Length: 301
Length: 263
Image (cartoon, rainbow over all chains, first blue to last red; front, side, top):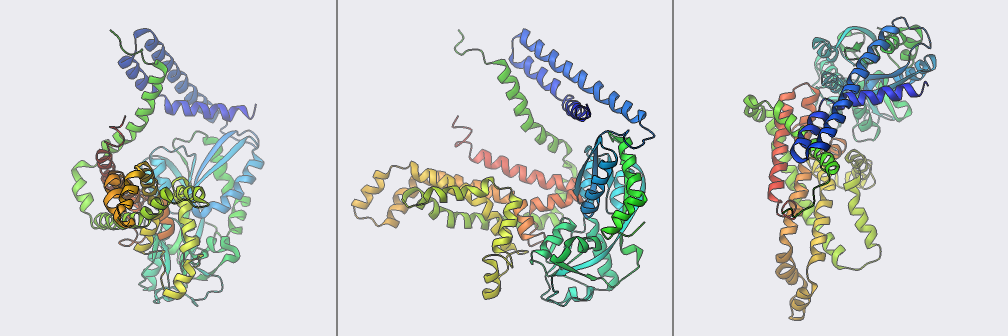
C-alpha cells in the first residue's frame, strides 16, 4: 500500500497537468475529421478524464496536507521534491537519506542546479515543494511573485580559490588571479557564486580576465579538476568536495559577511506535499541537519 | 464517389495530438514574444555580440564539416576497405551522443590535458578550450555527421557508369569528381551543408562544456539564451530564440523540395 499511493498520486498529478489542454484538442480534432458518433465518444472520454483528473488531485492533496499538520515520525508520506543550489548537492543528498530513514514513507527527490535557473523554473510552475537557493536574490525573486513565503536561513558559505593539485601556478590569493598566464574560470554573473566572486575581486581591487564564465559552480570545479583552468573561485564546500583532486586557497578576505553566500530555504506555494516540506526544513535546521551541513564545510547561519 | 477509405479515427486523433505537441511550444514562444521591444532586445550589445559570434562560428564549423566531411563521405561511398562499416557507425556517434557528453569527450581529447590536446599545448602552444576555435570544434563535431550522411547517400545514389565513362575517355579522377560527380550531386551536398550549418548554429551542450562561456569568444546565441533565462531576462531570451526559430523555418523552407515536397 505504501508503494501504491505515491504511484497513484503521481499518475493523477500527471493527468491533472495534461487534461486542461487534452479535451480541447481532442474535441476540436474530432469535430474536424470524424463522423458524429465516434467523435462524441472521444469527446466524452476526454472530458471524463479531465474531470476525474482535476478533482482527484486537488482534493486529495489538500486533504493530505491538512491531516498531517503536526507530523510525528512515520506519519508523513509521498514524494518530496527539493529544488536546491548546485553547491548543496553532497550535503543535501546525505541529509535526504537520513530524512528517508526517519520518514520511511517519504521519497525525497532533488533537483540540483544553478539557483537562478531553479528560481526561473519555480516561477514557471515547476513542481517543487522546497526551494533552497544559494542566495537571497533568487529567493526574493520567488517570494516577490508569491511562489514561496517565510524563508529561513539554513547555512552560509565562504568563497575560496580552487587550484590544481600541487598548486603549480603558486597561487596564494586573489591578486595572483590577475597574473598573465593564469587561466581563470569564474561563475557567470547570473549565478550567485559569480556575483560573489565579482564582489570579492572588486573589494580586493583585482581586475581579472576570466577565460570562462561557467553556468554553475560545479562546472568551475570541473574545469579546474580537469586541468583546463588553472584556478577558479568557488565555495569552501566545493574545495572540501573536490577531495584530493584539487586544492583550496583562501581568498584572504575573511569574516566579511557581504562576501559569504547565504542559503535561505522555504516551502513553495504550489507544494503538493507541504507537510513533508515543512518537516524537511525543520530537519535541515535541527542539530543533526546542521551537523551534516558543517561536515561538508558550511558555516552555521 | 469516395476514392479513399475513411481514415482510421484513432490514428488521426493521436496524430493530431502529436502534431499539436509540436505546434504548441512554437505558439507559446510567439505569444510571450516581446514584439514591441524586439528590436532593442536584438540590438543590445551582448545580443549583437552573440549573434555575430554565432554566425562566424557556425560558418567556420560548416567549412570544417564540408572540407573534412566531403572527402570522408566520398571514401565511404566509393572505396572498399576493411572496417568501413565501423567508420560509418563512428560518424553517427555525435548524432546520438548527448552533446554535453560530446563536450566532455572533446575535453578529454583536445583539452589542455587531453589525449591530443596536451601535445597541441606543449608543442604549438595551442589550447582549444575557452577560445572561438574551441567553439568551432565543438560545433563541427556535432554538425559534421549531417553533412557526411547526406553526402554519402548522394554519392552512392549517382550512376557510376557516367563516372566510368568519363574515366575511359581519359579524365583524371579530380576532373571526374568536379565535372561529373559534383554536378549531379550538388543539391544534396548543399542540403547537407545547410543542415550542418543549422545544427552548428543551435549547438549548446558541447560548446558550453568544451569551449566554456566567454562573451565575444564562445558565448553563441544558445548560450546567451540560457544565461538570459538564468538572470530572469525572459524578453531577451525569447527575442534571441525567435532568431533561431526564424532560421529553422528558413532552412525548412529552403529544403522543402527534399522533405516536405517529397511526400
